[in-house]
Length: 286
Image (cartoon, rainbow, N blue to C red; front, side):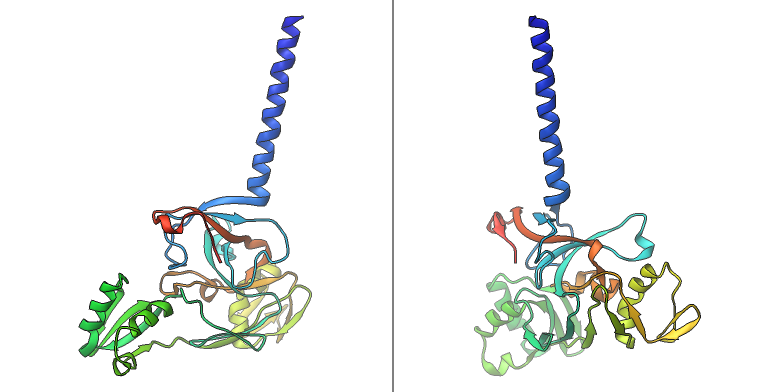
């Protein structure tokens, strides 16, 4: 009798262990999962070595507008070993988005650049030594320093530039200029809708169209050919997103990958639970 009770107790323990293990695996696979950040793409919001939790629940707002998200590469050449990237979700399905040095215009609503985005600024060589001295005093790193002719380039965040400008005269402040990047306008594809394909949209949707047509589409001379016939419209079968990194100098995002399909979006990065910098630990990420 005691032998049977022992077997029963062991079986109960084993069943309990398997149930708990299944629940933990289910939570990890479907709900929340921890990831190690290994890229500089989202400095200064996230740094290499940070451990973060990613919300994988398929709920409204995940992925969310202007949230840092984890996603997989949609490029067909990456099918066998799909790289994982982290970036900021700027465009939602159906959005019309305009990107310029002043910020984002989404559905005609101005969204300013993130204060933590890294941008390239130029300054006259004459004031560079003083500027660099102030940056060191403020403990702001001299990122990607490039000297070209009579100009010096440094990569800074808008907030860091604000801190710097508080320390110098207006005349010197006016000699620090943001290096402009190309502006563009796009419509983010939405499931079940057809969109006109101008050259910018066609370039961004190249991989999406190839994936949805089974690689049967031909794009030549900035024109789309389906079944040998030119078309200026395409009907998309799933939702897509547009992601941009806070550190554009060290990132792979939609400027390289194009539109990110919904089935390649893992979810919002929402919490940092371990970091080399203790000030970033146990904090929610926005």
